[in-house]
Length: 459
Ligand code: BES
Ligand code: MN
Ligand code: ZN
Image (tube, rainbow, N blue to C red):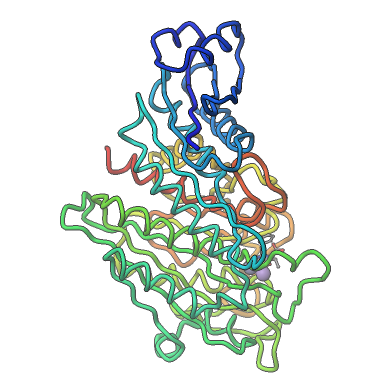
């Protein structure tokens, strides 16, 4: 069955639209802002009246609206025709985006019952020329969600590297995955220290998409935390609760891989490098002990006071590796600190940056437009003082208060280029479904980054 959805600013505008007379008559009496449904022998029709402005707040309402309409449609309606009567392109696309993002189920492990096929969408009117791109972007979000939702017994560090390799092969970008031996010979001490308690080898994935028509002379490097499971290591997380959702600790890595999927499919003229250090973090006979001093990839020594502050250790080596690209900008994505989650809840991610104001502004704007919002936290030098002054160059632990910032200052130590750090600890994983965001992996960071890169390409 084809479900038809009309997007209009007022009922009056429907006059010129072709639809069954009975449906038209049914809706004629409506004059308020509303969503109205008509089910009859003629088919399934939905009317969405929205006379509102076209701005970021309204787009988010429309995404939720789109998700709400999808949940009301009969399950047999998998083909959907959206007729944009008189909205502007962005409003119609936001509505469609909400529908497409809501159309997600992680059901590959469900063995019983019928599985719903995905919806197929047609958009007529303004915005129709952008629908294909929108679907690529939403598919990338779902790729990120899928990776996050995979438990560690299905997706370990090696599996993540292989998933990137498969993606690169099918979409035509370069992927190299360093194994344990290579990581050892590079002396990536942070990644190796976190991996010591593990039964499985670490990986370090290097993705590169470099089209001939790239607008940038120096690459944009995206770094993602790829901790496929975080038990805390010997500084074990207390159960129940705090360990329960730690398969999401590669949410940053998922963002990086998914962004590559989209830009390669869309063939955007931009040179991007992706770096993903990956391992699980477990206790084990050989596990790093609290107090151990390790030597990082760049030679910095670090006193590991808490093995649960592992993200910064593996990211630091990746940030050092990024230096060799002389990058224009490095953005890292990491489920790094509970402090970021406590500060912002699930409503936004924490941004900490040492980059030109224009970059920060553009990231924040992308955050508003996609509603994957960013709140900036300061990189004050006092946070750096918290992680120095021990018996090695750095400590991997600052004070509990301001923990997102001291973690960021640890990372900053390993940068020498414009850099933005996005802590997605509160946003990468959701414990209950809401509107177009399912329970589990959210894919937050993917739409944000693609919007940012789009702004970058367009000027
Ligand atoms: N992966 C966690 C952070 C996290 C917390 C992600 C909640 C998602 C949801 C990280 O490795 C961690 O354990 N951070 C510690 C650091 C502390 C020991 C300095 C934290 O935030 O408690
Ligand atoms: Mn941890
Ligand atoms: Zn972690």
